[in-house]
Image 1: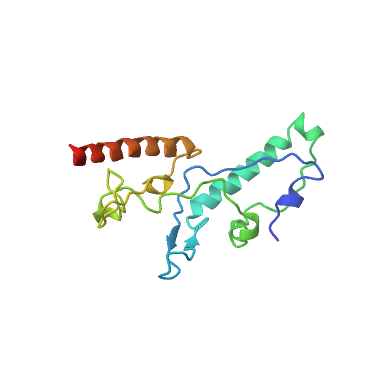
Image 2: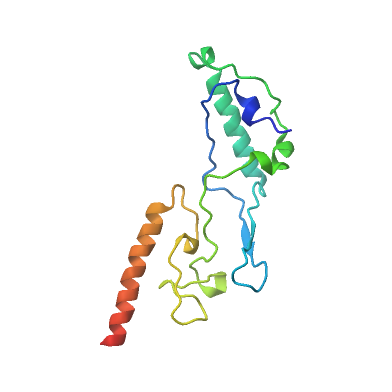
Length: 170
């Protein structure tokens, strides 16, 4: 059992959330079948790179040390739960792992020769009249919420679509 959740604090409902911005590990998705309505297989690859796990465990230890300091130590009874250097134990159980990220980058904007799926005008390579306008085009994951960046992509796409339409009608 991975010490987390119920073992972390007594009955206190407060929590600290540890978020790994810019993880080194990279996941991928693949088609499950040739049926376009079937969900794809998503391989998140959490902690594929050992530095991600090291940074998460280090952050957890730091959070615990903060709670042991006065005046927080008078409120929280931080138990010792055996998380010293048992990194491998943490990476084997996905039940206690979740993410704060919005998966993106599955249809990245890049040259086709560099595994890109869309060009700088958001057009899908090898197709006509098909664009992708969402966070999946991000070639790199933003360090925070993707909402603002996605809104900027949508704004830019609207301009590109209008521009292309005006070229056709003029």
